[in-house]
Amino acid sequence: MIEESQQRADEFYHLMNKRRSIRFFSREPVPRELVEKLVLTAGTGPSGAHTEPWSFVAVSDPDIKEQIRSIVEAEEEINYTKRMGRYRAGNTSTLTCDAFAGQMSAGPYKQHHHAPTPASHHQQSRLAQTPPCFKRGKQWVADLKAFKTTWTKEYLTEAPWILLIFKQPYSPLPDGRKVNHYYHEISTSISCGILLAAIQVGREGEGSGGSLQLFWKRFKVTIP
Amino acid sequence: MIEESQQRADEFYHLMNKRRSIRFFSREPVPRELVEKLVLTAGTGPSGAHTEPWSFVAVSDPDIKEQIRSIVEAEEEINYTKRMGRYRAGNTSTLTCDAFAGQMSAGPYKQHHHAPTPASHHQQSRLAQTPPCFKRGKQWVADLKAFKTTWTKEYLTEAPWILLIFKQPYSPLPDGRKVNHYYHEISTSISCGILLAAIQVGREGEGSGGSLQLFWKRFKVTIP
Image (spheres, rainbow over the protein chains, first blue to last red):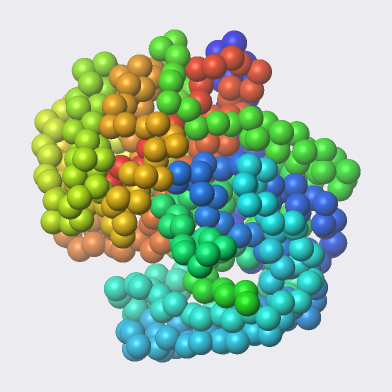
């Protein structure tokens, strides 16, 4: 029994150890069914008081990917050139993107079950950028130099799917009250770890073209 | 190719979907080698600027588990009866535990590689409790009622291993300067998700006795 556990643990370690954070992706299409299964797997994660405080938004529509890329690059350019480099705070900007996110429910246990909506189902969304809370702006730019990253995010239009992952600090009740989600950031991050594992398991034995770049961007999404 | 990916993704989903957060554990021993492999797997996770801002401390020594349980239960009792119920802030307490944590390095890429130290290697540790930052104390107690949890944590002495997981907001340089770890909480939480996946893979086909209760306690550890 223990020997088998050890063997499975060894194999899983070697599989996970092949995962790399990459910035270039194959354009080869990936079926929606597979993406849904990966998101479902992420939704099996634990969460504070089982509130499941996450939303996974899967996007494959080229136009919407293009819009997302524009928003992210514009904000990221400010990060590199101003927010993190010279200025320090007070640069909060509010962006309005009038077409992108469909909700995809990510847990089999969710009591208020939202029916999955196609990612290409356009909804009016408002995105308010929360300012990064790094203490040392210049250091951030210096630390990233080794990785040769810039604010250009080609993969956001190249990859067949973008998964936008949102933490939910609370959920609204029908009467307008809010239910707080404890440990929402931690819980959502744990589910991302399980998502990464699921993606890695799914691409076992495959060539390139099925990995994930975890890009954690702080957006506030209000779907009217 | 895609069909195989879909099949692996399906199987992994069904395996992960069997995971449950439990509060009762088998006392059956688990070899250290297996625990080390699980921690290694957690260490394959991505992290901000690849800083690997985590420490995993694996404890099997009964005396140390007893001490940890005392500390956690004492603090948790305050959470339930005072901190979260009536008082709201200003209840920070500092605890000193004079024997527990051995460091276990959790990543194969870490440049400054610390040799793994046995978890039973006693070190002088100082634990400073960071106060929880919930906004609604009474609500927290009410929300937890359905789970019938109290401040009693039997599993902390019953389980063959306790894994204490610490985020590292920075790492010290030899010259006394600090290197900031960006996204340390998110990165550490993602590694916990991968850890949960590794544990679940390891116990596949087993009966009870190999699961994990994720218990996120905010400690500040200074190892002199």
